[in-house]
Image 1 (cartoon, rainbow over the protein chains, first blue to last red):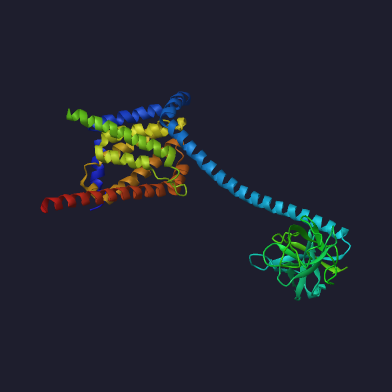
Image 2 (image 1 turned 90 degrees about the horizontal axis):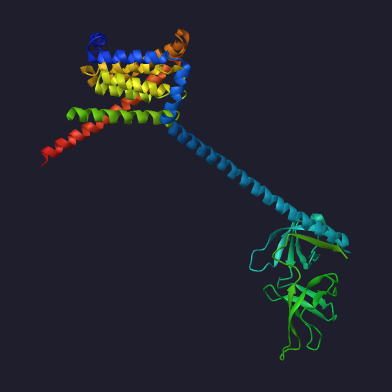
Length: 269
Length: 177
């Protein structure tokens, strides 16, 4: 059986002119035709009113949804932009700080009486307190074992090992590090060493010597490794021990060993 | 009273269906359009009304729906009403034919109605420009008719499956007591 038999179609065609439904059909058809041939101005007046009642609310809803969608998209784009700009801003800020630091280093180098080689810290030995670090210069750059290492605040340490393209710097906190030092005010001499921790000790200072809290301690240059007049630190406590011939003197280092980035190696003095 | 109730249900159904059409046209029509091939949901509803309620109701619903769809284009106001009145009447007049028990036949009716609707509408609105009408017909109308017919078939299949399930459940309830 075909899906739409021919006799059904012919029967339906004959109903176009018979019965109540055909009257409704023809009446509506003629009405539609009359509306269609109405002047456009008349039709416009009618449609404007009808549109505002029928489609109006939904059109405004659709517009709102579209607006929200656009705002959402714009938000996403702006969010990405904000992220990119903050990253750029962060980089610029980093560069600004680096620029300031480098400017200070340059000034320091120009003022210094030593022949200095600028260098950068590659890595710091992990641990609670830094005792040694790696710099980006080595044997090919003319570095030798024992060369003093400083920054703009004072003495950092000395080169303990020289590799081809890098070197190991032994910091003042290293247990094997010893520096001959003197009090700037009283010219009393002693030896700076570390007993672990972030505080240095000034040892070998007899009980009768004049050392006070707040005194600045510098290198004396007597050891032959470090040149004289490099700042080591400031005295923060002085104790007299009845069972010892020497004072117990604690120093706060002049250098912040947790923020080491650019250093100088003293090539000659 | 039953006649009055029946009329009221018809009116509420009509209003509900017209509301669906308006919402679809304003909010979802573009979402369901694939590569400029639109789903003619208003026509699907018109064919449904015709097949359920008969030619008079089909023609009346077609007339109102046509006017509603013509509102955004005042220049052609009446053209949609004219075409859809005819489509509503046509779909309603095949209501009582036995061959419509087959779902595929209903799909065929939907396909035919979309084709006729678009053909007549473009003929009227293009000022009887046959070339333009055939261009639109072969490039868009046939695919749109296919899309609408498939959507209609999917809905009808879904409804049939649900109905069959309900009948089976009722039978089970009767026999398993």
